[in-house]
Image (cartoon, each protein chain N blue to C red):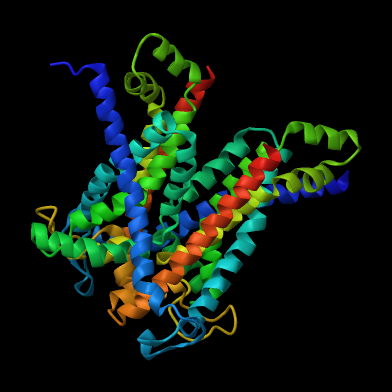
Length: 278
Length: 285
């Protein structure tokens, strides 16, 4: 029996709306559930105190500091390198073997799972370079991991700058570098910012790679050569070892709020960029 | 002029860092992992079910099966939901709603994997245990959690592919009297096929590579699963669970597990790249 076209259209639309509704439902449920369970325990004291008895008591200040260090350093390294790559690919060379090789490298890097980055960071930064389990080892591992995100978003942002801007800049007698820094980068900045913000988000969420590189020390880190446990890893340890559900939920809420803020910032930057370059 | 040349050279060196990182990662993972594979023998390493690191028995067959099982399950869920969202957002949904739904799906990609794993443990695992039986920590639980986690990847790449289909295809089909759905599945989906295949392959790579969420919900036993309600251990969980205390041959065997994972992921990456490159070439012609 053939289904009449009008009926199949209805069925398909209902099926797709269901899929989308389920997806949105899952998202809302995760956020609402974690916040409902965790917000009551997410106090100022929790955020500003150090953990006691392995995290059963006290707060998460050292983990917040550690997370900021790791994410900040990772972006400090991957940001300039990623933007430089994007500038090179768009402004300084023609499409050819070299550009496809660079793109191939970035695409493959984007697909490598974080546990492999963890293994690599462990054997390369922790052992071979002798950095030990430290903020620096973790940050450098993450820098490589988020590099493709920065490259791709920066490249898209730079390509979206209208060619006429470049022509005008050249017509006024600027060199290529002046044109890039004063015209192209200035217009592309919010778009590049989106990529950087997303890279920060990925760094904050990361667990597997950091477990094998930054270690899980509980103390307040005094330098980048010390081991430090990030918020996400702390949450994992609290939940998995059943140390304290209250603290686990509170930590998860802090993570979710951070991710919400970061995604909103990325979204806002992107809209500004679209409004500017159009 | 000399200054410009220096700038160009510096930019090129920095631009090569992604490629050189990939090379260094490959070199180090293989260098650490291959010796033990050579010692045990590749056949035994891959097809033996005995993983007793302390006695020098390194067989990862159950973990390979575990990874494949949870990935297959994740594909069913992630592709169904992800493709549904992508088609709805590009073909049927008013732009106003797209502006709400698309960022939400991107947000789903930002949620840390440990949070997914945790929700899986506190909600999904007890639910499966009470309604379907078994320990709850299972292939099924891992598949559902992974399916949701790969959904944003599948959706956003499929959306790009669907949006790249020329408007004229769609308009031509509608003008011939086809309904919107007939147009979608006979014309638009067919034209976007290679991009959607690439989205599915990359989603598969995500699922095989995910670690923390799977550790929390899959149960991590070393036996071959007989049903989707049995617990399993994946390649990724094996590495993360034992890396903390492994030394010597044991540590090398974990790196070798990483080599297997790496080879599978690179094969999937290449496949996705070839598939989507074919699309762009055809698109240009």
